[in-house]
Length: 240
Length: 344
Image 1 (cartoon, rainbow over the protein chains, first blue to last red):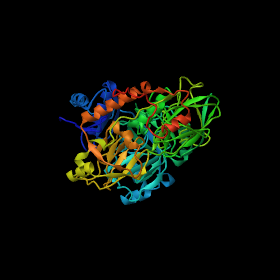
Image 2: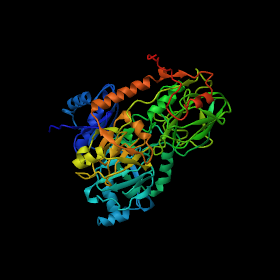
Image 3: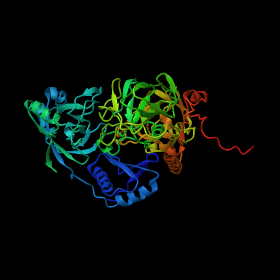
Image 4: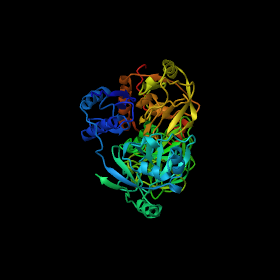
């Protein structure tokens, strides 16, 4: 399939390369492949690239390079671009489901005519792809939610959901890096901190990584939370 | 070691430099100075590179004491005035602080953001490459917080270097409508909405902060709905949510968003826009990429030439002289060397 990207001007110092308008692993794979290519050999004047679901935004110094030079280069680079699929790290993320850790679990299960444990089973058996990181530092937008448990957002967003919340909203899933407002449903909570400014590495997850969830017993929470706060990743790398 | 000690300051006072570059892919906003022109001027007056972190004031000023040594500082922006131990001290000049001196920075009078730069910058460890404070990321500043009474800001320089200077320049750029490049999602709007955007007068709403400036004015109607799959955001993007009222996204913005962006303010006009106060009228004018790049080039050259535009503050020019020449409180300059008069 020949895929011609669209180039969208973002002022004089940025442009967005758009591969499509859907949330789709192949489109996202193209975005990440182009991102990797540009990072491996950055053209003069390129300052920063920001991959999102279906497009890549480039920030550049307009006094060094320009829109025309960059789009010519990007047109060439986009030809024959192979989607970069599932080449990132796969992380196993421990989750305590339900109860005080996931206050919406029972309600969401009931909506879908499932028992809470059936819902957990469905949620924890999928492999999720991190399409992008955004909204907040370390907030991972996950695709791969089983359509059977897709759940439209709450009509009334909560002003605060706790750090580590494992949420679903529509057909998306997410891991909350820090306390934030959200209208998504809370199924559980992980002690993993995807963003910790004092830790090395500061960020655990990157766009293109994969996530699998491992249900754990609430009794393990305190130990794992302490480890995470002490700077351990707690999430396990199951494929580098 | 010389410290600048905060006695008091407004709640939105923070350290800002050129911003945090390279971490938007992890959801970290670039942040950085809202008006780079004024930051660059303040830094030039104390011999710093344009991007060195300074104290950014939003509307309100503050009071500082110099502790442990002498220090050169400079205040630029928003028509702020200052007093040194209760005597007037001029903006747009190098202010010499002696150990124990108190500098009082007044509130903004003609804009919103002002900068107090210190010679040599602050001896504070950058986080992810920057000292810029960003609240949501808990990064930057002193201890990841806005400045507050009691903070001790350690300075890199223990003894002032160079002579006090005066910077008799004004930022380049026109005073007319704010210039924009249309897009990235101008195709999400009706032709009438585009016409309205480029012809109507908007006003800056009171909801204006480092994240974004909400505008009041006519509604802009979407032709294709107001939800897009979230994509990248840049400084100066003008997004239009369901309300039809535009929001200009500023330095502390999020890194991605799901509302269509009708246009983007050009980089050369972003500082001028940031200084507009709530209630101020604003119009937009679409320009070509060539015009925007020419303006960006002009701004870059202007910044590069700031050090050579410095004029020594002569010792006989006391504060009273400066006041009497109406220097304080604006960019107006009565001290600049006069061009030779060829008419006589």
